[in-house]
Image 1 (cartoon, helix red, strand yellow):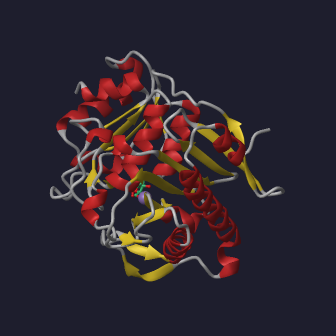
Image 2 (spheres, helix red, strand yellow):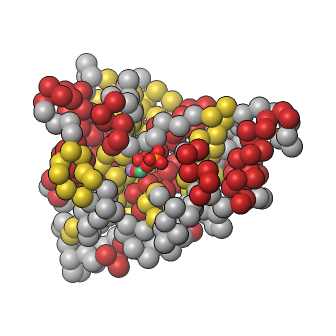
Length: 319
Ligand code: F6P
Ligand code: MN
């Protein structure tokens, strides 16, 4: 069976990008090990501070952020990082060539209940003669050279694209390597499964209300088929289900806070997942445009997200 380094070696992935991917994925193995220790290591619970989004940080948000930051800083190919848990981009090596944006622990409210969480990452090629500044990294998602996530579930899995399809790897703790277990993932165009936080229903736009109402009516409505609903409450888990068996995931704009265009963050949640979905034959849009075409205006920018089965995303957008 092939492992991650075999797959990277047999692809045209540049050496320095391989180095960045190796550091990132090895650090995720260390995060996975820390998560397995849970309460035993005294790492659960709150850190006692807030991130730039005004969300309370968990100890494990901070620990996983520091682990990734330290490891990536030690990698000469890394020019700068951006993280959900860092207010600003952090320049690393001026002559590094890659910029990595990451959500160190997505779905961290799941930690307390021993449910799925993950690390999401997005990588761009970016060079310059002076230390990186935020403006250097406001690059549309279509320029990503690699994107993926490591899911910490019953197994630890790496899902990766370098722009040539999507591969899934399962972590083998006996060998301490990621082994290729699902090659060239494809998301079916049609689906009967959706994911949305229904408790926000009254805050959605009329069009999202109408679309979801038709899914719920199932065979009794215009869709002529019944739909199932799933909500992991960690984007990484919901996207993983879609890559495994199809579906549609929505975190639409809502008027709970009209100033915010959505809950999810463009640079380290929506963009990497959008690249994975498109590479797997699916689609990823806001209510108005393809996510990968968005010109970012800020590192922590939020967006509305509709992603998954191509025909179902089109159907949703037709509302
Ligand atoms: O990172 C934000 C996030 O935790 C996503 O992983 C997840 O999809 C969403 O928020 C869950 O939001 P809610 O609190 O509405 O269930
Ligand atoms: Mn997140």
